Length: 158
Image 1 (spheres, rainbow, N blue to C red):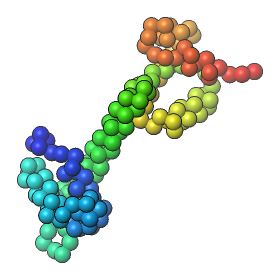
Image 2: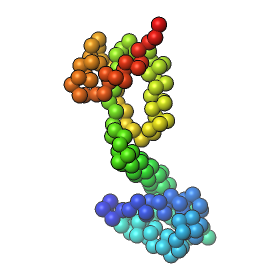
Image 3: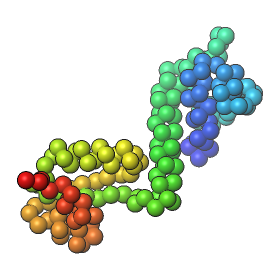
Image 4: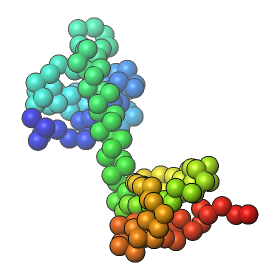
């Protein structure tokens, strides 16, 4: 049933929850209320669930609706990260950074460097491994990671 699911439907669902009504969601998304209602109806029909209780003046999320809104937020966040990563790659940023770290590297300096890297490149996946003595150079030389130059910057100064 996920084949007919769209990010737009999830965006509509999350926006209705955030604004409290179909009409307010329509205003926020610059769409007619009927388009918002249709997106929700299609979502409910294709997925076979009732997301909103419409018996009152305002739509109220059903128990299943609350669970689906939380999941929709995660999916939309993942889609945004996907787009940001694709844009970064298009702009020449490496798609992933693998770092091999020597066990003698000071943890504080390494963590500080990772935080600075995350601020500059928030969507860059970083993986690292701790290598035994000499393992950092071997990992770099084999192409498993880009650690050779990076780990040199983490050496303690005297």
